[in-house]
Image (cartoon, rainbow, N blue to C red; front, side):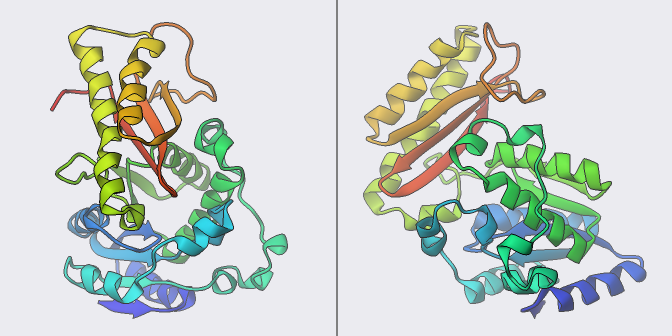
Length: 290
């Protein structure tokens, strides 16, 4: 596996591979890798032959500077994990290296505005977040020129934003993979590393509430958002977490606000805080149980 500490070297490697007829599977990350990331890399390698990973804690998508500073970083540890799952190239860089035309000056960066999927929920609570995501992902795609790019479904709204971006650019194919969970049900996330043992135990209440809502959907055939929300709110309160939102959307037709009336299809989306750590999760309610 090769490690490049600047995106231009990675771009040169990727161009050479593409000229040789190789297919590139790309996994963009912010590092602090866990099994969920590694599963994406394994799939990229299996389906494309070459697996490329970026590790960059993107300051453009953080609206809270303290959150940016606290985000876990361990490039050497990440590289060791990636070497063990067949990754071909991992690369990183600085903001100035990714946007040399702007000299690292945010005011001179040509920002990429996200589409309608950025409206509501995360887009409303984290102003500028999806603008920062779309801007860096477009640049990462320019560096790698991937055949396919792989994202985890835990960040549901983000996957919609990225799909819209790829449609506008005309590439790459976006592959969204199911989120991996710890044995407790807690969705794997780099932010889990910031949780204390007590907070990690209490954070399980998020998945417990989502699972209860899905059972209500299937067992009681409940379709009213207010009634489906009740077990989520109750579980998170019992876990002592601070709930930011528990809402529903039609997974096939994103809307800024929660649909009114009975739901035909539904993904439940949650954001909550365990101490200072903000966690998000989601679960498709009309999908199969198990």
